[in-house]
Image (cartoon, rainbow, N blue to C red; front, side, top):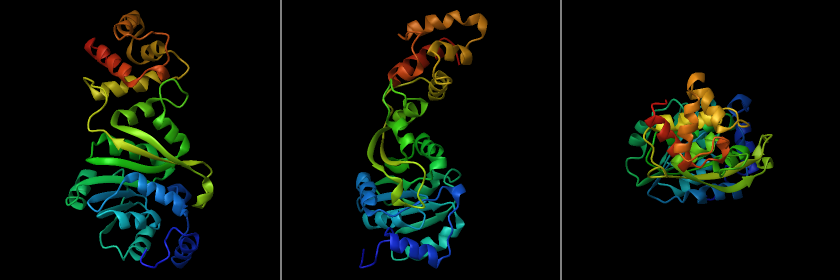
Length: 294
């Protein structure tokens, strides 16, 4: 990179940390990536071009940001830790098309950010090494707000990545799997050992790509109701879908009606929530809604 040692090299990372007197905050889930091969896999998975914009969340000291800047036409990095802003401004000074924003991405108006920072690009990707303690809220915000995104490529805890990509019938499949797959097509890119971070986390990580869908794979009459039915179905995983739905939607005197509605949706009452596909949940949600069950 223009003859400079990359930020992601262990030596340069330690040098930057020492030069700025930076100390890690466990509460912010700060783990800096120091493996260039993993960075290559993350950036390659996003398929960036000169006309691509990138939103990065939690850039740390800029190891991934530097790689993104070399590939994309516009990069905006949102960092919650005020202490990192001057470090990022320093190390990323050679890249005028990189914008550093201080803030909590869960509170940022992302539509406004996109309008301000990405008006001149053809497509936008989210590429990030996400803080593990807040992975799911961040990803669901990105998906639920239906932003004009091509894809989301993130490093997250492997256990969570497995749940997002899981198929019906397995132990990892649950309401998170359904929500993510409703909005996107997940694909595991690679697993990442804890040894490639400073400091080392206690868990194994994975890179996952979410190809954002133009439209969901199933049609539902009411999205909020659909997700409420999904959540209710997994309230207690060991219980049947019939028992879980009874507890959420049916007073005791009306529970025999549920068996009829499940039959109308083509679902055996003895099945568990983890065995139903997105299409079956969509059908069940619509049947319940048409019957006035909400």
